Image (cartoon, rainbow, N blue to C red; front, side):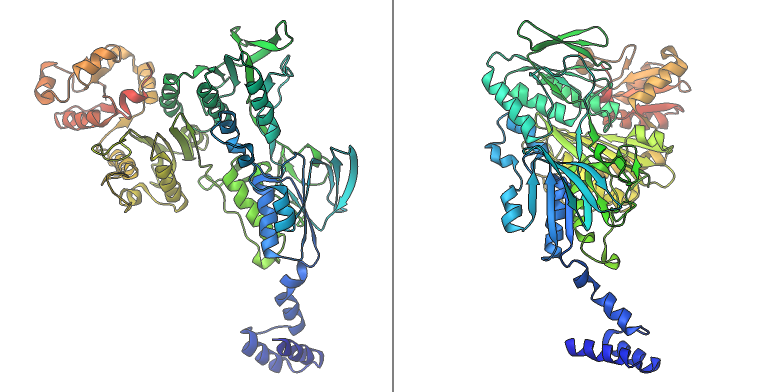
Length: 610
């Protein structure tokens, strides 16, 4: 190869005929026409570009550490430096609640990659307890504050990566600074909580401010420690930014049965201190008083980007604007993780994503792109905001759009809800799953899905996430050849059942509605103008039922009993059962008998308010 390079360079210098140069380049490099000198420069640009380049990364953890690891794999010559403002460069945010509860131990398990591994194994220089103060994009410098030495210094760079993540939302609430009110975002935070719990044996009541993932997971661990837990949120249900009201109601019932209490549509107005100068009660906006011994302030998060003010880097509010290669308006400055907006794969709109998975993937892309030349750079395709949490053994997750998001984006969408078992009923540990799918009535493609269950919820969400990414229709999903064994599922998998139900709705074989749609029917027509039929057993009916509903047991000679009630075949009729299947079968019978305006409630009584 070396001889070849010398030969072509010699030919270029001597200005041999264009025809001869073209012929040699074609034979050696399969290039039809080329300026030899320019070609050689481009061909070996990769090796020249990363020579002794200084790559500065502001912020570690999922995004920043992924950048450093990938960049080092791509180049041994690059000078890679990380500045992280906490005392650990890489830690497991999602594991923090479980350290409080004693599930994760020892503490070192929370440190994903120790600083010494970056220093000694990866040859990456890491400065912890160094906070970025400002960025001068034009002059390629940043100012950092050494928090231990309390001094500021200016750092130069060739390439800059900003991956500072988010910080806890701090609201101006009176007495928020009480020592027994804690945020939870870093190792330092969890150390403080753990120390307080271990050294205060009189803790009984814990107040969780916020019903998001961290609030619920930490609440579970406090309950497992024997504390009483009250969760307060200004939203109408748990996980308000992620799942729909009906799925949230189903999930909340599981949590309430295990001792977690909730107050929704309310917020903390102020905290009051007791005689010991610690806050011991909270006053809510509604006037309610909540007494507590320890409180968790899980009120939300905001991008940690104040230091970018006046940097020249284009922003969208608090978030950094980037292209698909994760570049800012300065091609040598990149950003990734929680501080950037990225494309949603369903709507193609740009929006935030505060999840570890996309942050890590973006970090890998940036780690590649800060090393290689433009033609070899990678692009980040986008997200579906797929997530799942587990509380008391019940998984609850979502991929794609929720109903609220479908409405915001003006989709003409349908809803399919099924409640199958996670695997066949004759095998041990068979339990119910709750699955919900949203689909586009025009394109027949899946828009989003949600799942709740002890076992199997995550697997179904992963299948549906893949289906959405691949642009599959509900009819494609109907026929997915998914693995089956009695321990893992059923011959007709829950995902396929979701799609089959959606197909039935589109073909007008059935006219399923959600409970929220049923409530709107009552508002519009009046309950007296609707025939509400309960097709469960008498025992189920006596336990609880919807007011003024007519009991016609599906399993007790329904076809003949239907005639005895002398129902109006033209009147608006709504059928429900426990989970939806009996109501669906009843609807088919009634349509065959001439009922013209009949609907069944998807999910049945499981999704109806008490």
